[in-house]
Length: 317
Image (tube, rainbow, N blue to C red; front, side, top):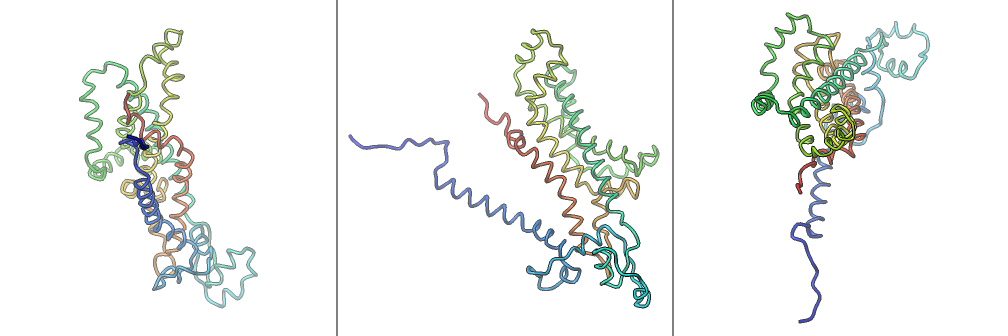
């Protein structure tokens, strides 16, 4: 018999399968990005264009939504507006075109700063404590280890809002309501179970022989952990940090219930931005766009570790 045969692996997908999968992924990505693109576009619309029907896809962009997001304004009479000196800035002129004047900065920047402090603070604590706990569960003989791990996992089996009332009463009794420390501790406690379980899987995949060889060379247990284990856990730590940050950054119920001013984050504040005649949709969209940026930037920075962190340990030798 003569002829040529193309070797084909039963594991490797065919060219047609790859093309179909690529088309499906691209279509899914485009459909998923439509709401995000619409939010970004709405932030550059005027209040009238934002509620126009049918919706306006082509419009004249304006920064009125961002100006309304960062300022408080009040409407004045035509006589009062006529007596004012000429506007000094472009945003002052923009506000006056609506027969309004700026009375001061809005509360958005403070709420945004609270989100940064609480979100990244709780993420750091959850990953730090989760790394230590995961290493201990993986490397040491912990009494009732399986029971403890199940107890930690069980905290993820019910929605956090189910314990909102007891936590509210406890925080009020301890004086931790509306405080950065209280919110960081709460979000850390909620994220800790996810952090421990994710990171324990990464530690289990790192051979013990690496640490034993390091300790034979004179390293202490802590030095072996710091210089040998921790660098190999970087992918898992990055993936865990992203998941913890997404929860803490987007959490709404606890932030609405336990904070009101000093430690209030952006999620409860953005939906109540009121403009003339009701919700100021361009300002809401502008605040949402700015609110997405830190998580997007954080994910982009760690994107090289994210895929490896999610798939780490999927193929065993």
